[in-house]
Image 1: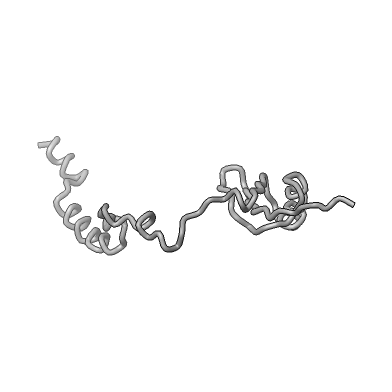
Image 2 (image 1 turned 180 degrees about the horizontal axis):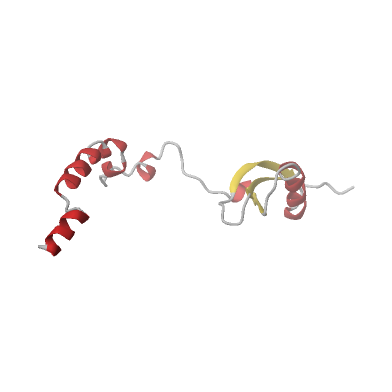
Length: 112
């Protein structure tokens, strides 16, 4: 009797054509082909999907949780992305509208 080796595959599903593939779970299977079938049965039986990926778990490379320098890029100032920078926009817009020329002003200028 031949012993069969099973591997863990991570499953990614694409729900719509323009959507990203999203990790939905893992399956255990002896081959990628069987992993696709098992993944389809487990993750697409009740929900719609247009594409499915299975990736050997051992083929995925990840960062270490201790390697904070790689992900914590503090060199660039990204404060413009924070919501606090938008609080004065309403005031600036009001000032702009008060100084802006209206259509009536243009018509009056043309008539005179």
